[in-house]
View (cartoon, rainbow, N blue to C red):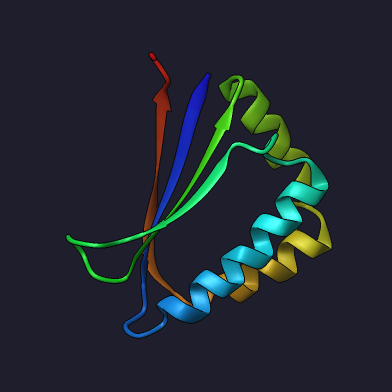
Length: 100
C-alpha cells in the first residue's frame, strides 16, 4: 500500500476558493472511482501559510499510475485542473510506502 501526498502552496488569501474547488475534485474523483475511497484533504494549522495537502492511498505505484493515465486525459479532469491551478503558487508530490 502506498500514500501519495500532493502538497500545494496556495496564493495569498485563496484558501477558501481552493478548498471549494478541491472538494468538487474529490467528488469527481470518487464518482469516477479514482481513489477507492481513501482520500483526505488537509490545510495548515502551523508552518507555511496557505498550504493544502491532498492525500490518497493506492494498492501500488502501478495502480496509481494506471489511474492517472486513465483519468488525466478526460475533459472533466482537464477543466477541474485548470480551475485549481489558478489558486496555486507551487507544489510538490511525496510518495510513501505504508508500513503500518
